[in-house]
Amino acid sequence: MGEGGEDDSQKLKRIAAAAYDYENDPRWADYWSNILIPPHMGSRSDVVDHFKHKFYQRYIDPGLIVEPMTTSSSSQPARSSAPQSSSSSSSSSTSNNQPRQRNSGSASRTSGTSTTPTSCATSLRWNRQTLQFSVNAWVLVVAVLAILPLIPANLSNRAFRLAFAGTACSSLYSLYSLYGKPSAWNLQAVQVWFQSVIVTKDFIYFIYCLTFVTSHLYLKFALIPVLCRALEHVAKFLRRNFSTSSLYRKYLEEACVWVKSNTTTLSILSSQAEIGLGFLLIVSLLSWQRNIIQAFMYWQLLKLMYQAPATAGYHQNMWAKIGRHVNPLIQRYAPFMHTPISTIQRWWFR
Image (cartoon, rainbow, N blue to C red; front, side, top):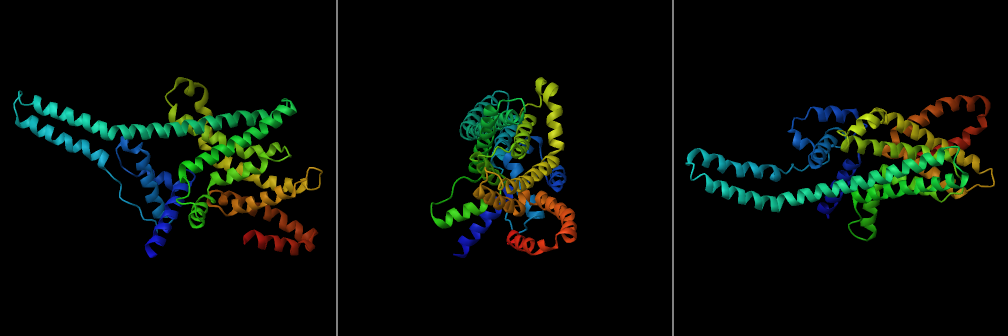
């Protein structure tokens, strides 16, 4: 029982480490720049993930156990090259042909056993990245169509729904790629899996999109977080895979560099839009298009955004600014609001 509980605890810690937003943590850039590894290993995702876990263990959660990095794939060529060098230095030119033939045979066998899985894994990662890029590029296009004022209302409303549907599919696929499915279809396993994904940004965006894709309200303001997310994903993919393309350098490099250097600004803009939407939904309760269930669910989502590590920093900062401006006005002009506001705050922080 103790070992099983410890394994579950370490599993949750590893999931939290994988979901941590390293790119928005300035300590990660300093940490990664001080790691001295060969360039060909620095591009491997397993190596990067290993050092991300080491960083998470050092700065976030010292209780995380980081397994040693396996070096079998990199050490095998070194072992196979040692006999070749020794044989070439100690044997004659006629005897060098046989070790060369044997080494080529072993190299072919090695490539048949180890190189093929590596290439398959690389191609699988490439396919996943390409699929995510395609969906997010499509979301970017339809979201822009939904926002443009000259587009007919029927087409604009359809593009509005398609943008949220595409983002929901992208978020759900990302959750499946990172966390898979529950280890077993029982209450305990599903609960452990759900606790690991509920605080992730992909899960939050999935619920966010479900809130609006079925709504009768076409609040174009709600597309701002979707646009920011799609823009970040598209720019990141283009930087990683098309940085040597002349078309990219001529037309897209400046925009992608701007997105990379302003990710914090985009996150702040998204948080402002998300909080503003909460108040818009409250105002919509006074109209004939009111939807009480949607408003209640969205404020539950805002509460999750306030507490989840991926979005908490931006939302807490925004709510603090709102409090600094609103609280003096309430104390001066509406002191009777203290009691209901205190009740709402108790629910919010519960």
